[in-house]
Image 1 (cartoon, rainbow, N blue to C red):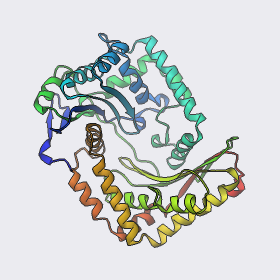
Image 2: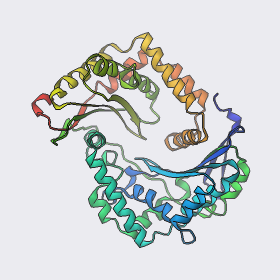
Image 3: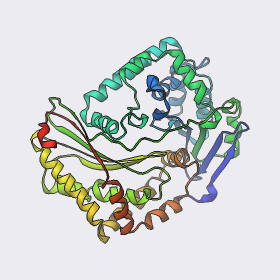
Image 4: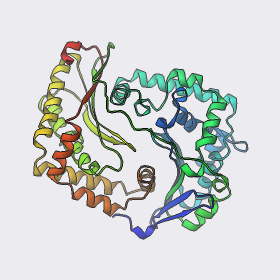
Length: 417
């Protein structure tokens, strides 16, 4: 069931850091996260990958805790600890038994206020990240998404790989990373989110000795991307499959069309009943994997399609995808598939409320994107309110716009024309 609005509470530490919790009385765990409103797009070009570098480094230890001690403290209570970096935010989180929330508060409070940045650990993690970059380059179904982002947002930070490049990671000094942390990891950019069996007031009180000591800070100033896109990027490689990604400019976090685009995306390639899955895989057997997605950012978005097929069938694959996209733009959606798509989005939203981690994440993402917690009932109402006309309009707006194509594989470029 949707969370009761009375169970979500918000307070601020004395320094202005927001603390938002959702109480789940029947839960046996608590998920606690610190969300930082800074990501890959907020880095200078020469320091690309700094946010991701920090994600690796903060759990390496503090002046009073080693990386091993941090890991042992979490393992000793059966907990989980992790972090991730996106283009617009970074999150550090832990999931623990409800009566051991203090462990998470102590560890996250410590690493986010006094990371050690020991030179030997910086160098060790640098090598780990370089291996991660090489792994991405070796996995074409992942790397083609990087090429697509670069094509849809050419010359803009939204088009950069969050990991950074080999050159920027190799060139980032210990003091560069520490300075990036000192500048951005401040109260103006930090939000603490927790969900589970917890006491809101006690959590706020427990955070004051650590995160409550931070001061000041500023939010990043972001410039929107220009409207230009790169039409085609092809990387010839001797792969067994050709990996194809198509992209269009989407909509931003606050755009009124974002729910209609979510429905359009679901109809196009969001599930097993979608048009692309049925036509590309089920009817024609062109590939094993085909799907679409729609990402939103503060001032832009990306709607995309991915598929992998044998190099000899790329031309046919693109013809089918373009045909399905053109039909969506020209004719919109039928009542039946509209109902299926809306039902899927409603159901997946509700199923995502089953555990403390997903609820914590829902609130964190909402705060990062919209600076507020959107109630579940409001989200459901917005999905239910989407009409066929809404979907037709956003399909024409997004999929009717300029298209970028990224391909990795041993493909004859003549078939891509």
